[in-house]
Image (tube, rainbow, N blue to C red; front, top):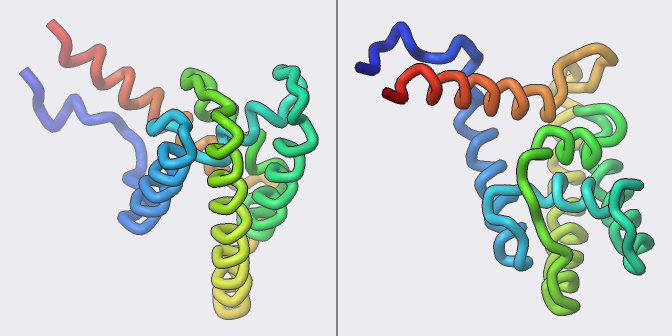
Length: 156
């Protein structure tokens, strides 16, 4: 039987953070990707050296745009770390039309996020990335590990 004592011991992510993750996953699904994967993780995988593709320039370009957007708060290589956090998920490159949709999402989304993020950083200097601090990928990995451990505890 499940009791509160079986709850995983990890910090709960803020509501707004979960909403942004859900929007990110929706964008990936609309671009013919895995609905349980983020755009950053998808781009990180296809831009990595582990994947051979004729479209490597496309994926590397998206990776540079996304990484530049989140660099002030998460440090370098956002897509790579997102991919590592989602290593247990699979995804597809999608069709030509799906890649156009993905490119539009990344281009417009990163422009909007970048503007708001940099404006917010003017008022909240403590949000700037400091080397050695917890990254998004670490949060995600810890959350998945805790959820898996929790599921193992309550299964008969």
